[in-house]
Length: 296
Ligand code: GLU
Image (cartoon, rainbow, N blue to C red; front, top):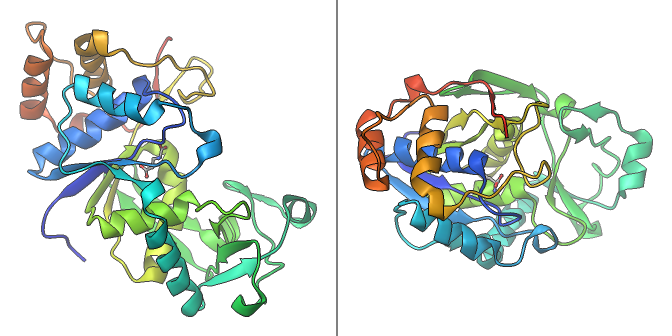
């Protein structure tokens, strides 16, 4: 399936403020969209209120604006899109792809082996019928390899049944799983190209499995390098990455561009000059694929 127009997106979770790592992701996905003559959407992934930080969503939007990002259309909020996720789950249930599950974490931990991203669900509820209901809903995986050709990371494959296991679509606490919501939104918003951080490469085969089960197209993927600290940990709220500052936007943007293989000439001083140079110079070929260590 090919898309008529390039449409990219940036999809922050308001669990914290933007840091140098999320800025690199935003810059890379924005410049790639503009270089391809495409659109760039903004989607707030606010599906997990207990993990969210008060005021973070607005702060993220204000910061992106102060940095000079120009997004297309209205910001989408996942918290307002529950009906779409519900409809997708109903379709997956009707087609036999989703089944209810009543297992607790303890049940699973007692039996399961660890896979690539936590426990591999041991299939205890696989025979439950939708009518029996359950606290959570899982996607029933078929055996076989799921592969993608990432534009930066190359070929990436998983045997989902072996490496991940039937994963959750609707959580026992009633919250929608990221893996379902992201697929529903990318499809519904017509996203042709997903450019995001390489920490999400491990999730991509799961998202392809959901796309295939729903019969929606698979976008092109490009996973940008993540920033890591001296201990090799990804910059995040957990590793206490400092928030980027709108007051120092030009310096922060210059640094993000350099990290992405595009060091601006010294005479690009202002935000406007930096963006103009970056838009004219951007090429994915110059972006490094591996993690970038920063001394912060
Ligand atoms: N909301 C996710 C995050 O902030 C990104 C989701 C995506 O780009 O697919 O890590």
